[in-house]
Image (tube, rainbow, N blue to C red):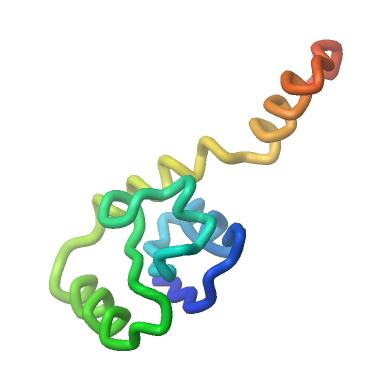
Length: 99
């Protein structure tokens, strides 16, 4: 379980934890939520809501979150360095780059 309490433009830490099948909790306005959907492949709470974090942690202890963790892992596989480089190459029209 990764508990990330600071909203960031993008949480690379969360993506890395998901790539290892680790569930994470982030504040609602975290940039990583552009990739991950709360309650489907991650958990989120209102910023600075200590009771919200406690509720999500209790939810994790009280429920089987294997499906949530598996979905996070599967989604993280879409955002590899290679896939990112290919997308950038396609965007700038560099089709002759070999990966």
